[in-house]
Amino acid sequence: MTSSIWLFAGLSLLGVFISSISQVMLKKSALKQHDTVAKEYLNPAVIGAYVLFVAATLLSVLAYKGIPLSMGAILDATGYIYVTIFGVTIFHEKLNARKLIALALILAGIVVYSFGLG
Image 1: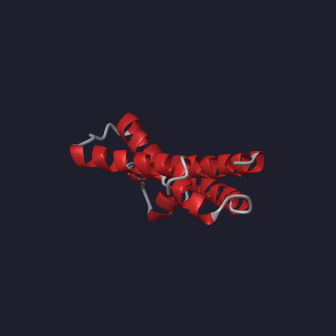
Image 2: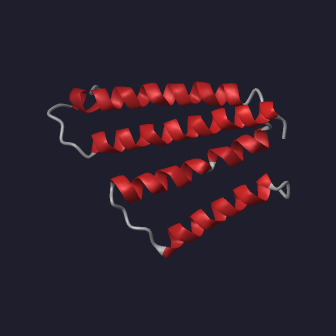
Image 3: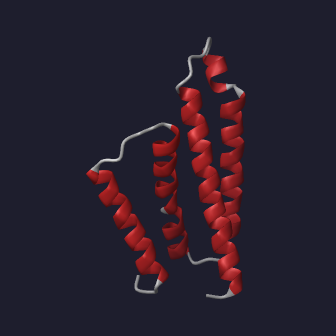
């Protein structure tokens, strides 16, 4: 891969990571009790999460200018890994065998694609 593809792939991964952070922010806000419906949707965490979603979308648009569409789909799959790590570390969710197998398959797909076998 050329150096420009690495740059655009990095932008894509950054966008996916930022998107995963915004999902955590939305979940943390959803777990809190709010006095009104307006406060539920118009609080700093929710607004900040949506600002991050816009930033992640802009990064994705920019990244797709320099990476193949097939690579973008593979890089987007890393979001499942980030969200799982955040779920376990921040929300103390449990990993079961099905989740571990699913993560292993996602990682295997990324590795296979990375070595040009996909």
